[in-house]
Length: 482
Image 1 (cartoon, rainbow, N blue to C red):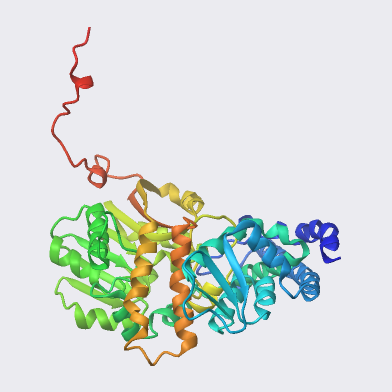
Image 2 (image 1 turned 90 degrees about the vertical axis):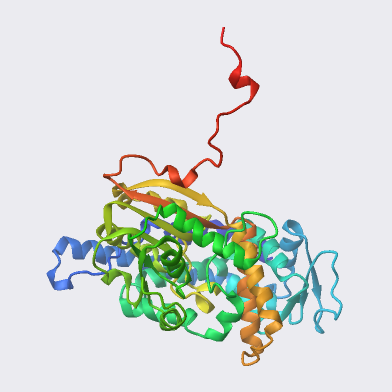
């Protein structure tokens, strides 16, 4: 019966809700805005109308949510979700109150459901319900990364759920609109609070997980059999080489992490590096462990930086900037970079367009306020003042990095102070990300920019310098021309 209702109601509800979850709907938010009384009446009217537009999808989400919840109550045994999984994935679903066997099978990906409420939580809350139910111990899998990899296949076929998919639509609308109305990243204090919730939780955890380089970003596994440390050093030198560093240069690192990359550049390339971070733990660690006279690590918001630099780079901060502040970021870099300078952005990217859902599991438990850019975000109007020299993608390397981080946890030996729920949350985070990178759903990008217009006399050939410079000897190039 619920399926027949879905055929009639779904088009109506999608028309009411989906049309509002598009990038152009959102107003353009700026980090600093004039008080309301100082704005022109027409500007106030436009902004009031925009706010009204944002409330419409919120109201529509309530309608879709109520209709969908009723359908979920009618089919709470999970048959619809099981059918979808069977049709589109290779997951083997097992209802098992006792959980996974002590010797799990190795012939496939199994999903052991210990509590049937998992089905309702997934149908109502999507990835938030799936992640929370794992944290609560309601299900297990013999291959957590493989399970998430398979579940990602369902993202593009949720329409098959019919009416049962409406709560997912509702939660996505709420998660997107709530951020558009109440962003937390516009002020330095809000951005600092978001950063502290992830990066300032435990130095002991990060030291064990990240290893000796303390690099908390994707490594560069460009050859087989590389260790995590080798791949991280390769990534650091890749960034440095793309910057074309020369001794004595002044370099700015936005989001300097624990300080390893700044120290490497100063030591190996002879440059002066100023690094800024909003994490108090990262700042303290860098000050203690990387005491380099050519490195200055500051606890400071990048938006308050002043001065002129020969080179600017960031590794892992762009994911925390927020789409509403991309223009601010590029304008600040335009101000700080010398006219003949080079800028590198090392960032995670995302494959799908549309508004970012801040109500999902990853934003709720791991990275509050974070948003991933898509390729289209690097083609916006403010990019007209920049010249893109190079764009490299190597996301599978990040999947390998995440697996290495999980291995470093060594079943939490020496980290007994973390309770079981936190451990499950953290491992789920690592394996979810690994699966997403392996599926190419999330990317790892390095973009190299110069200013436009620029005083540079040539392209950045150093980025893709051929490894062999001697003349070619192939016969087809040496034959006589008749």
